[in-house]
Image (cartoon, rainbow, N blue to C red; front, side, top):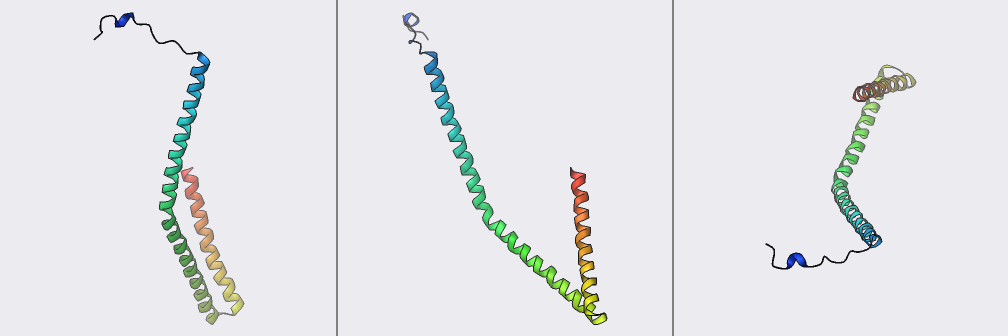
Amino acid sequence: MLKPGEHLQEPPPERPIGELVHQLVEEGKAYARAEADILKAIATGKARDLVRPIGLFAVAFLLAQAAVTILAVAAFAALQWVMGTILAGLVAFLIFAGLAGGLAWYGAQRLKDIL
């Protein structure tokens, strides 16, 4: 509720527009810096949380690559008993190159469907 005589008080003196704009720009800069710091902290925290899973996926990828290499060598060795060394190498290459090409083609088709 208004006190007696309160409505008769003079409003505070107005500040120049230039000073208000300068204050607004400085507060905007401070807000942008604070937002950038928050985003940086969130990104750093998420990156730190992703280090171990990424390392585990890298090791799993290397082990899977080793398994496929062993499978290719085993296929070559099995084919070498039936045919000569060079022909067994070519057949093993064609088998695994065909598998890789088929998987790449299938992946490209799936990607086309998505896009």
